Image 1 (tube, each protein chain N blue to C red):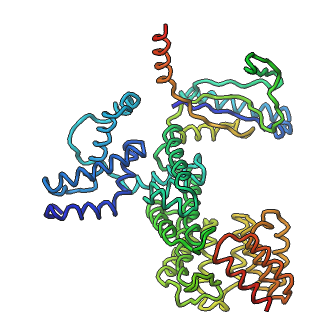
Image 2 (cartoon, helix red, strand yellow):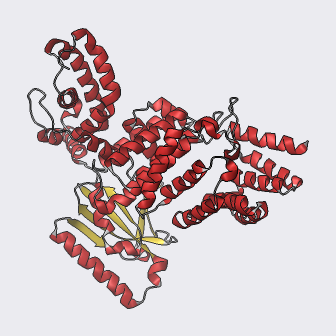
Image 3 (cartoon, rainbow over the protein chains, first blue to last red):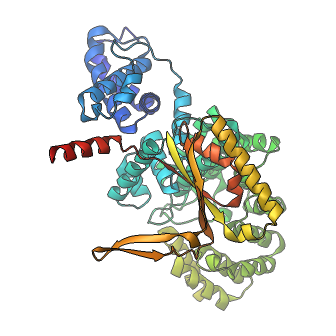
Amino acid sequence: MASIVPEGIPDLLDSLFRAESRRILASLIRLLGDFDLAEDGMHDAFAAALEAWPRDGVPEHPRAWLVSTGRFKAIDRLRRSARFNTSLETLAELPDEGPPGPVEEDVDDDRLRLIFTCCHPALSPEACTALTLREVCGLTTEAIARAFLTAPSTLAQRIVRAKAKIRDAGIPYEIPSRAELPDRLDAVLKVIYLVFNEGYSASSGEALTRPDLSAEAIRLGRLLLELLPDPEVTGLLALMLLQESRRAARASSGGDLVLLEDQDRSRWDRALMAEGRALVEQALASRRVGAYTLQAAIAAVHAEAAEASATDWDRIVGLYTLLARVAPSPVVDLNRAVAVAMRDGPQDGLELTDALLVRRDMAEYHLAHAVRADLCRRLGRTEEALTSYRRALGLVQQGPERRFLERRVAELQK
Amino acid sequence: MKYICFGYLDVQQWSTLSPSEQNARFDACFAYDEGLKKDGHWVGGEGLQGPDTAVMVRYQNGKVSVTDGPYAETKELLGGLLILEARDLNHAIHLISNHPGLKMGPWEIRPAADLDQMIRESEQRRAASR
């Protein structure tokens, strides 16, 4: 590395920034205990490198150099700024002077710490998601706002408040102890899952998917698994990979929704599927099977069927029954009803769906009406099907799903 | 860091307990508090008498008014408060998670505000105006 010519250094720093900036930032946040100070320090460090490296040569451990320089620059900033007075105590704990030497580095751990800090249960779920995307994934505030259809100013405010709470309430930069892990890990997994879902099936808007968000979620899942090999982490990553493997087949060239049974299975990504299935098996073998692993197992059963008619619906019903026990929710019950309809016929599915539709939360859920409509359609009960499609259309918020329902209505009216 | 913890009492649940069960809860709480004191986490704390013993003092329309109250229609009443010395929020959560009082209702944990700077500035303002 030391042999790089000075002219090559801006490019080198560019690629270092792309590859390492999140890890460097995570280390600086741990060392400085302040998000914004760490961010400033990191940018100062890259600027300093641009100046120093062409003159002195590239250091042997560039990342360590950047971390310790960033820390030094941040302390410098503290000294100069008005925060000096209020930060005396913090400053007293920091070493005084000296050139950047090697810092004790544990960067992967630092990133995990940062994920757990961003996903602390004391923060609102919205704040956790926004903060994780911003600080761990490095997405810009504008990009996050776009993805969640929020005004950038609202989102920026949310992030600022979350950072302030972390500082003022004393939320530590640490991976919680074994005993506290389940709670905290749940929050982390949920944030990753939320990010993935928003990317896999945008809750509103014209596009069916937002691949950038799904890719970030998968990247986080891989990182988490590398650092914390827990069955549910394995299960979540498997679930995301299996869902992601169908991306290309899920929409027509015109951006319309293609149902699982109509998808061209040759367009499913074999590599992602194989990886996902292997992870599911690994998670199931742990014998501590949670909600993510069960959902992944269901996705794996679909992946195993060469064509839709070869799907093992009996197995899927069984997995949904288990899932309803582990993580009860009316949405799970609805999915189970669909699987029962595929196994035993639409009449059985319809009875289960009607039992669900008496719940107030389900009566407002467009997919519940869409399911009922489809089952009535298959039973030849056209009028009832049309009524339910129209109820679903009154509730749907996403373009491709609306167009799909409209097509079904048009077909039935022929 | 100091954390002020507000312990709420779930009145409905409490009223279903027999006197001996209630005593057992109290004993567990006091025993835990003794542990907090021994380990240096106890800064202070008090149990509160019932809201029917309270007065509300307000400044309204230019004068001070005193009424009874507050309006304790809620299911959960503030039963007491505890001031903890803890390393950070996770530590405070950990200490409260093990407090037997948590079985009697939820707890709210709030970090104490550091008013030193404000007090210093106020002292300067008051000295200057003297």
